Image (cartoon, rainbow, N blue to C red):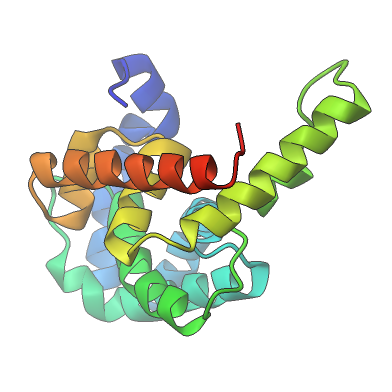
Amino acid sequence: MDRGPMALAMEFPVSAEAAGQRDLVDRLRAGETASLGEAYDLHHAFVRKFARSLVGQDALAEDVVQETFVALPQAIRRFTEGSTLRTFLVGIAVNHARHAVRAAARRRAVADRWAAQPVGPGATPEVDLRHRQLAEALSRALDELSIEHRVAFVLCELQELSAVECAALLEVPEATVRTRVFNAKRKLRAWFERRGIR
């Protein structure tokens, strides 16, 4: 989903991050212990939200977050100035989440966070129940996707990154991201149709 610059700025506040990013990255590269804690404080919530969307379980998401920040001091050598530290951390989290998703068998609930949220002000109990049922169905449907399709779908559709952002994050061509999202949607639609869920 392509979005305007205002929406992108709200999701990835690059200007605010860029102000102190160079100094923080330099200190991380120098191995300064306090810098890792600072990076954690700044980006833990965002990385955890992403991991929770991808792996579906709180404990598993927290494992991915911890592994991401443990890997950061070594991985920071690959950081390039063309990205933000936040997107760099999400890239590390993707790699760790791949292993976590494969190891978690079939018991994932990616859309639990949707089911836990109220539909909106004035929603009836029936609407709220329907929302929860659809969220649970989507969770089961996402289990049917390959890890590549699942990552692309979560990043572009749930985290609302553009195909350009997602391509940069995954280090694949933009066309590959669009194809993966297209195929993910096609497979999800087929899954819902086979079960008569609308």
